[in-house]
Each structure stands twice: as C-alpha cells, then as structure tokens.
Length: 98
Picture 1: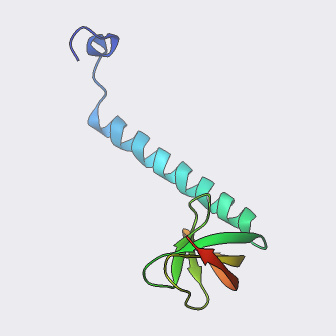
Picture 2 (picture 1 turned 180 degrees about the vertical axis):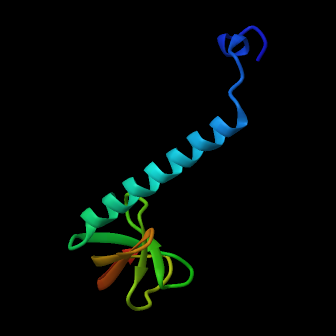
Picture 3 (picture 1 turned 120 degrees about the vertical axis):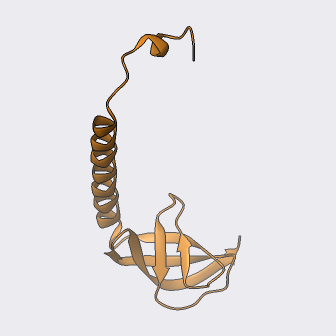
C-alpha cells in the first residue's frame, strides 16, 4: 500500500520469488514427513470423513483408515505408517459421534 514501509522497498525479481517459494514448500513437506513419522505407533482420535475411509486427527494430520468407519464419528486409531503426506491408521474402536 502507498505510504507503508513496504511501498518503499525494492521489488524482488520473479525468479527469486519462485525460488524462495519452492524452498518453503520443500521445507514444509520435510517438516510434515518428520511430524508424521513421529506419530507412527501412537494412538490418535480420528474424525471420520464422508468416505468412511479417511479422516483427520486432533492436530489435523490426514489419516487413511484400514477399514471403513461411520462418517462423522471419532474412532480410536493406531497410526501404523505413512504414505506420502498421509498417515495410515488401524481402527481400534469407535468412540462417539462428533
């Protein structure tokens, strides 16, 4: 905006913008993989989505379930592995409707 300190700054070259964005995406993906790797073996409460085979934990990690569960319910799940940016979970028990 005019009159702000940023308005007086020299523009950054598009190639630099793209390189910085790529570096941030790479760092973010690596951090996500490290986080998911730390979840393996842990129990998590997963909110089951419409498909019945996917959901998210309390900390928003995506989970693919080993068997269908009722959409909209919370299921106790053991995180057994990772596949890309998704945790793999084994359903232990249905907890309650969300």
